[in-house]
Image 1 (cartoon, rainbow over the protein chains, first blue to last red):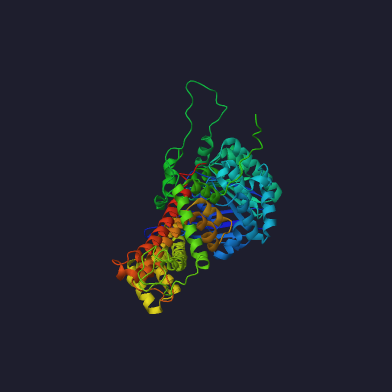
Image 2 (tube, rainbow over the protein chains, first blue to last red; image 1 turned 90 degrees about the vertical axis):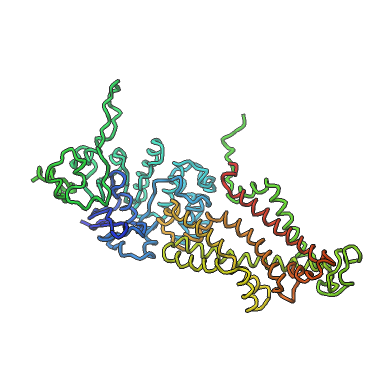
Length: 331
Length: 290
């Protein structure tokens, strides 16, 4: 088996609060192969976005810091890399599309200038060539009459169009990994479908691996090859997407899957209430006590769950879960 | 029905938009006209009105309108009009140079402090405070007396006592913009710090900075007048402030000797203030029509 493109090993990210380092991501390991799409799911505040930022060396510091572990990109540890090297990696090798297309473009430059500038800095293209490349990228991400639109300022475009521009900027250097942090959360559902079609096309054309961060299980099922579920800064389940939707093992995962409202529910005067997981994600500060972090919210909690934190145990090849119940059933 | 599909609005750059707003402000346009007139007269005037400003040409303290020198003469019999025309050059030169120094120091210090934060910010802000608590006029006088009263030294002296407020404003703008999503996005595609400071954040911080820079020209002109009035000006040149200073002892006998240069300073600073106000409105997106 060849080495994966990206391999995260025992990553711990902590934020300084007063005199303590509070870990927000703990002992996180995962791999990403070339051309693969990995979904990272979980509620708000469980460490998805900060994990993504850490891959680019962009954990806000201070107060944040990678305190342990390795991020191996093609064998090179990015945690140890200097700022200069990271700037080469950013955009060139790994790039990111953010959640907020409305505010993620620089308001004082035209979109053509912004894409061209990126191409110029990374490839050393001439101005004319960089501009041509920008127009080409705009047409590639499906912006109509790109020649004219390239002269537009961000405020002249809709949210969906701006997100396309963000994607164009992220892809202009043909990175090996594209991280999309809730790329469609701020967009209409119809636009969302278009953006995901675009991702699929681009993956095919550019061969980029995609890390898709979302809390939308429907999106995950449609878009990804493999899914990793995070809860309170830890990975609690991982597996191929089909297994994840059909047969979720961790009670948190099955909770997430049950939370999807179904349109096929028959209309009635007394509708079934939507499923919800009671409670909220615990604050990172409260995670130092023993036991499974999900235990207080778990419907299937057992005495053992409150005392010991289950480790990740493989269930099948490529499939693992951190839950005492599953592990006892398996044993 | 007209064909609306082809009538896509032509993209308008932010500076074009600001200029359109500016033109609607009559006071600002008037200010701009006055300033341009003063600049043109100062630059071209000495070639057209060729009386030497420092030669004694007529009876001392001649009132306006009583000789071929229409604005009269000063206590040494020098032509006041020639003094005003030539003094404008010096006053404007010192004003613009000092403002340039003010803005260069202020923006650099403020940008570095606001962008890097932490220790850099702490250090630079303590330095800024040091300059803030110095008595401006006294410090500038010391600098000029130590290094000699030539135009460059005077400009530098004015620059180093007036950059602090520009630095504070720049710092505040940088701290605000630094946290914005597009800065994060630029970082994520590999923009280094230098690029983030000068090409990403600074253009977004520009509007208020342009306004204070323009206003600092007016402040610098007043400052120069003050120094000249106290006798701290280049003895080989004529400036409006120096004219006021020179004619001060004769203010009761010939008030025109201080009135005309005072009026020139007033008009110039007023024009700059009007322009500054107009720019402030023009850059304010809330007042700008879409």
